[in-house]
Length: 479
Ligand code: NAD
Image 1 (cartoon, rainbow, N blue to C red):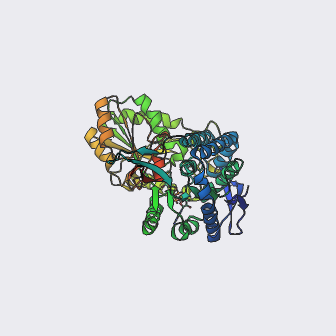
Image 2 (image 1 turned 135 degrees about the vertical axis):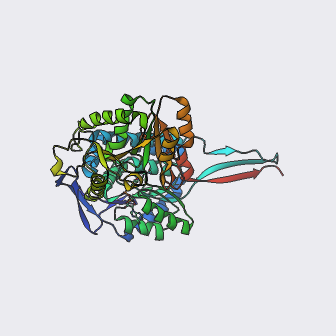
Image 3 (image 1 turned 90 degrees about the vertical axis):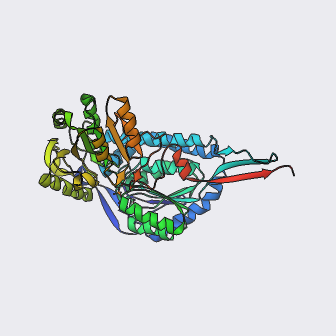
């Protein structure tokens, strides 16, 4: 397969640099070829999006919603082939990848329905002859910049609310998800989506991203990715006074109190830490345990870890696949070396039977480092979690909050009072009890505190606040 840009309804193959995409489960296998764009493609997409925006915004919400329903049906029809491609491209285990595509279908339907819901409020006026109300209006052309770790769901949770609000979109996916992005655009091209409403430009983050942020006439940016890139984007957007949303890194803690049901907590902890090979912004990477149950929890984790199977992403029985790329393998590998040198191994899963053929990393849990150590403070974005002991609830919460990030946090307990106190005290945008740090539902707001986010929220109704502006209208009808 070859990547292509989709601009103004036309398929364009850039003549720039060619990059061969290798399957991270079998690095000798070629999945396809990327053709990287240059700035001229960004400007072409900007023109196409600008040209399409007025008539798209003039459609009724119901008409835009109908097209989103078509996009959902088209995606549902091609769900299996898209999931297979994404799994080959970035290594997410096939069962999980199918779940991600299903989330994409649901998100499209959820936002399609918004076309028929209220988009404003009637506001009483001090003057009896004045009708006053607020309504949402679109921002215009929105740039959507996405990472590789959720190559289907993240783009859709930005594109769907952007479109239903009447915006047009220029989408720049990560290079490691660019084949999946091309296929997704092909699927959407089967619908009645008008030309130029959604435009896809594939290329290098720095070049395409910088042109988008610094030069193209866009009205807003929604970005998900690393904190460093997000901060740069925020500065660029603030300088132009355009609306921006940056969803960034995490170092999520799961706290296990002494009264928790350990048998139920352990599989949830492992799923939070190791599904998607730990490459979720909401992955559990710190497990904070009350001392009284430290040893019993360790024993259960050891038993459960011994049964986790790492395998090819296409393997239906594998718990996790490889990490996504050579770059990820190298970065996570550095943290694994650091853990081997400076921490103590608590539990490890067996190596993949096919370990030599791809970017496979054995999931591991370590202990014996203090709360300021790099393994406890830095985002690893791989299958490595750190155990920390706490003297009681207060210390556990303190450790949980001792982070520059604040995306997601969980507590395991049977005590309702502790649950409520944790929900109050944890400094995270998403706080959960007896559940994974990952897996927040699409109809609920998604986002973080501190360095995890620009303090806006995605998904649910919150996304509509980002992709629209409020206009206050007042009519004096008798005077
Ligand atoms: P990244 O920052 O390297 O890239 C993200 C996107 O930004 C890619 O499309 C990339 O090409 C583009 N980009 C890179 N440099 C750019 C620039 N100068 N200007 C504009 N765009 C640029 O991140 P990644 O490695 O793809 O993703 C992993 C990171 O994403 C992790 O830190 C993870 O925590 C984070 N993430 C956060 C969330 C969330 O919702 N908070 C969700 C998923 C992933």
